[in-house]
Structures are given as structure tokens and as C-alpha cells.
Image 1 (cartoon, chains in turn yellow, orange):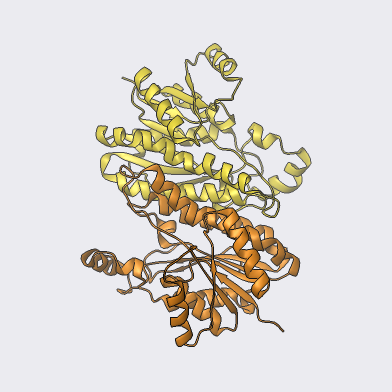
Image 2 (tube, rainbow over the protein chains, first blue to last red; image 1 turned 180 degrees about the horizontal axis):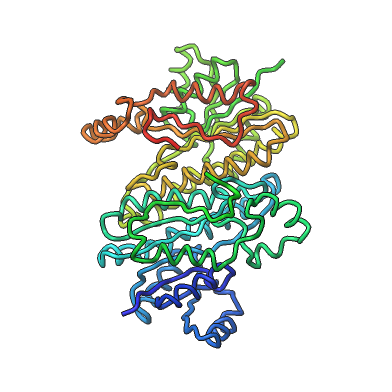
Length: 246
Length: 246
């Protein structure tokens, strides 16, 4: 029976590439989208036309009970989750001075509390079955900090603290827990940045001198999800074109 | 010249007391924060007084934005603008991830990570306006390396470092430095309350074969708060007896 991979925020730029790659490798791929997402059916149809029979479930990753209900449904309808990719995330960029407590809280809950909320639902099953992969999608800005992103940098750095602690707890049970930290990738989120800022501010920071491709992130997720990656745990893998070397 | 004011959150705990004393010796007006209604407040103040330290107290719940706002308004009214803030208050709720409930996750994330927003947001803008400030965030070796039984604490304390780096970038041109200190196992009540045999095995795992002294953390805070540390920003100072190197 094919393994089940659940990718949160799978309809976004990175998430979609991850879903496609995992499906190509034979995983049964399930994704979540936020309850307010009106384009879910359209996305599923587009994927279906490309030959990918994904399943999608509405889930608010910042809400524990919503995650619980979602994973229960996935388990019933598709099967127990073997690979969890905590990919859903948001930004609310602004200088610390202008940031409100709500801008702080929503980023911490969606990007960091979500790791608790989702992972909690699947970890016991993984350790009981002695196989599992938890892959947390962080960011270069969690490793190096970024102007205008105190909330995002805190959440994304926190994610790797979570990764390392959980990796230690489940290491003996065939479950690995890793973080990947993408740099600037050519997703919609990044392409929304004005071209002149990209050319003058962002690309000069990247030794490889281009944006990453979503497929390159998907390739790394696929590797971490594989049997061959069983000895990799608690790692934070940078994939940023040389922008930051920690 | 009026004395600079330093606010130390969780200032009456093991590390906090040592930090308060170090800053008082440096000539700051030191305000120690404690929880509203903290029963040992007066006793602590009297004890400090007998030891020759004229410290002030400020009650406030660091996990609550409004409480921090009110507290800092009062501190600034009573003693003047806060020039140095040491975000030291923290709690643990250790549990293996499997056993951890959402309440234990939230309590640790809110007290150890959201508190940085709640407290720092009240003072950072005016530090920048005055062109001088020091923000010192107490992380932990377990935020840097991860610890089984501490997914919540490791996530929060790693998040502290992400926040530190992002805010450092924002404040760099304003004369305000933002740094983190990651203590290892220090002989505070929190660590002395660990079961003897476990504590001994922790000591055995430290290359220096001893616990840190609270004064050793106080000295690091004192350095980072000093004039001569003005070029240090975005850094994490590990003080752990060699337990973990980055």
C-alpha cells in the first residue's frame, strides 16, 4: 500500500510543487487549505487534468481542534499519515515599531503553533508503526533574521527548535524530524515583490544569482521523505543559493 | 546625568536576581519585574536591601500585552525611560510530545516567546528615538540544540534567537543593540529542583563538569548592556561550559 503524505498549505507555490513531486514518487498525497480558500475546487480540477488525483481538506492549521478533525477525516478516508510536511505559512511583514500584537500572534500561530497542532495528530501513529517523516518548512529568514520580519523570523527559528527536540524524542522509533530552510524561491509570494527590488536588493544577496525553483524545494522534501534519508534527523537543511551559510 | 534604567523580567528568579545585581553594580536603576501578586516580592526586595542593593519592583504578566503596557508606563513614570530591557522571564512545562497538551504548549510559547513582543514593543520605539538602547533576550542551550521532553521550550527559545536577529537588523542604525544569551545548565532553583541523579548525569555531560553560576550569566548581561558592547548585535552568546558549540 502506498504511503500517505499530508502537505499543509499544499495549494501554495511551494506546496503544489511538493505535492506533485511526492505523487510522482508514488505517495498518496493529501493537502490542506484554509477554510476560506475559494479556489480549492479549481486547483483540484487543474491538478486532476494534469493527472494528479490529490485529495484536499479544509483545515485551519492555527487551530488545534480543526487539525484534529482534519487528520481524523484523512485517516478514515485515505489512511494513516506517514509523511507530514508542515508547509503552511503566512507573512505579515512590517517593522517592529508598526507591528500590532495581532500581527505578531497570527504569524506565530499559523507558522509555529501549527507544527504542534498538526504533528500532534500523527506522531503517535508514526512511532507505533515505526516509520514516519515530519518535514518542517522554515525559511532562511528564520536562520538569519530579516528586517520587517520579527514575527516571521521568531516563528521560523522556533520551528527548528521544535524539530530538534522532537527528533530526539522519536529517534528510536523510525521517525525522522527535519527542517528545511528555503531562501528566495520563485513562488507567487516572492514574485509579488517589485522587479526593481528583486534586481537591486534580493538577487545581489544570492551567490547563485537567481531565485530558487519550487521544484528544487520539492526535490529536497522528496529526499527527506525517502527510505534513504532515514539517518537524517534533527537537521536544518539550507536551500538558498548560498545566500546564508550558517 | 540621570541613571539609566534597566528592566529585568522575571527579575526575582535565580538568573534574574543575579542579572539585577550585576546591573545595579554597574550603576543602573534596576527594576525587577514579577507576576502580579507575587507573594515573595517584599521579602525579595528586603533581602536585596540587606545585601546593599536598592532595587525596584514592577508587577506585570509578560504573557499579556496590556499588562506589559500598563507596567512599563508605570515604570517610566516612576523611574524614567527604560534604556535596557532583559527579557529573562520564562517557564518550563516539560513533557514528551506524545503526552504534551495544547495548554502546556501555549503556556510556554506565550510566556517565553510572545513575551518578547509584549515587553519589547513598549520600549523599542523610544529607545530608537533616543538613539540608545540594549535589548537582551535570554534563550537557552536547549533552544540551540533541542532537548527531549521540551518541544515547547526548545521551540520558544529557538524563536527567541530568530526574533533577536530580525529586530537587530531593524535597530542597527538606531544605536539599539539586540542580542541573545543562551545559558546552559546554571545552578538556579529551576535546575537544583531536578532529581539528584538526573542533575548529576547532566553535570557529567557538561565538558566543564560543573553547573554555571548565575553570576556568570549576570556578567554577560552586564557586558552586553555596556557602552563598549555597542558593536555587538544580533549575536547569541552561548554560556554553557562547552555543552554545545555552534
